[in-house]
Image (tube, rainbow, N blue to C red):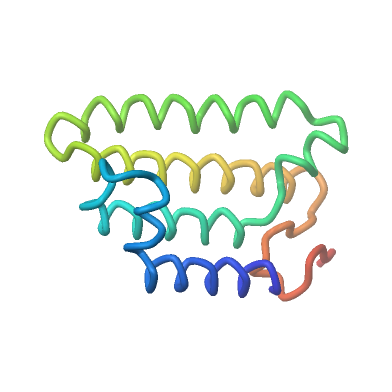
Length: 130
């Protein structure tokens, strides 16, 4: 839960000081407030879903990890192909956010299915057994 609180706090600070954050990336990114918000929301979900990739790798389930990562990559490529022509950078931000959430969610579901361990931060504790 601390990880989620830190992620939400960091995202809020980045949005509050978005001019400064975008300024660190250069003048080319000066007008991307909405895109920054989309990516930060994705990063919050990234933290909320925990570290299932590390867990799968550590337990020797590299095949399930590969499947979840390939699913995320394929969804990212497909969504980018659909969204970028119409929405530009915002479409890329949405596609990346959705694919990361799907990748992490499928990895977390694999951990649950294989070991009955809730690796996400929705469990209330870091790792719990039902």
